[in-house]
Length: 203
Image (cartoon, rainbow, N blue to C red; front, side, top):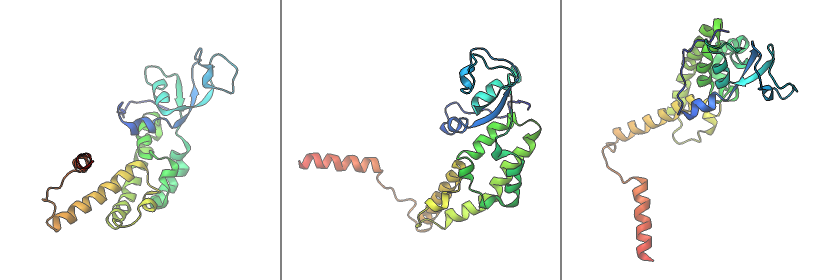
């Protein structure tokens, strides 16, 4: 597959770090010396050309750059045609967290590795989020007093962030409607500090 750097990860982003730990099927196009430990099933000191291994996404991207095409990469099963068809049928019922807790983030990292499938992968990511977003927002707006664990169980991390943002927006809107949004309140940290200070004085 072609390797175009169309998406650059954020070095300091925890979600990027976690997402790029997912493994990608790769094939070594060149022999690599003294890296035989990457293949525990082989007793060779080196990785020979033609060896197929699953490598972390971050390593696959580094080895599959346009400057040094050491490996060729394939999309993981969860982004291949079979799953794309499932998403097209009804993305709203899919347990995305089970497919990958950082589904969208990983998908963006895979775009440079997707070659001719890049357009289909990009379409999959946007269409999936578009179809699921309304349901996510509906759930967020109607579950302020409910246990949200069941609501977010099938959501990936990006969707969970959107869910909580939707809940926060509704809470802020309700405060504004009740004319309480302008009321200044003591922060939790200051309140706890004052309680400790008064406890020390009393003792």
